[in-house]
Image (cartoon, rainbow, N blue to C red; front, side, top):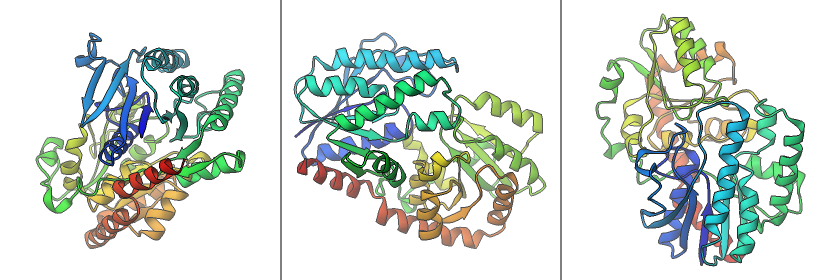
Length: 406
């Protein structure tokens, strides 16, 4: 069986789709699937081509046994809509012309968003005689419309028509959460869907075998501090400004420290807000390679996972949850719906706060900081739950079974 994964995002970039797709590719490769990847020159989230790739000489490479083809992409640090669209459409164009030179595949799996890449995927799947698998990690353009990121009616109309066409052309539509799958089933009941959840490599994240390293020292943290850690994109969807507002409310509780690690479009605004509020209990740290995450998670006490209060996020399960749980770190979770059901109500692996509710978040920070024994108990349940339900090995095997049946 031959599978081509078409995605704008892939390692050495750091991020949820990058890790998820690579982990899936590696596992399918071990099961005998001939997996290859067609992706862009790495640039995310800094929106600058990585130094090693700037001269364009690396057009093909191998990452952990997976062959990776690279094509050019337009990048810009601008936050306006036109450069963003040029970023997306440039890869749509270059990926098609790069991909059409490849040989036939049994399946072509495309990652959305960006939704527009579906256009290249539909043409390539026909050219390469491949069955199309359309993977949805975010319901675009619905989420972009509801967050106010895209308001142009003509663009939205075009995007919704493209979304419909992609679903109908696909042999299989996969979704990262059950909420995404349910949304697609409700709107397009005739489409063949499959829940392909995110997960974690429980063999990589083994808390008993990992040292915490010098993270606390580098972050200027004391051994007595209770550290609430957010690691990921500092973006619009996360609503991280309320974390800083809540930090202001708990500043008299000197043991509470909040670490925000990552990069993204909102970072400068968040740094300005920290300065405005005069916060001493919030520390910003730069993004790191995936290999460093286990030791960092070992060094912190609670994983902080916020999202904005939007209906579209009722089905969201941010990928950072899984690694934290595998490292026995309880959640302070500001994501309602599917994530709350799985990890708070069923897994009993943390505490929920109402999304964008500053007072509720502040109360959660205080209560968790004052109950170290409860944190330990939550951490034990966290590891057990995620190992049983979200093990990447099991997820890949179930997906392979579906491919074989199609």
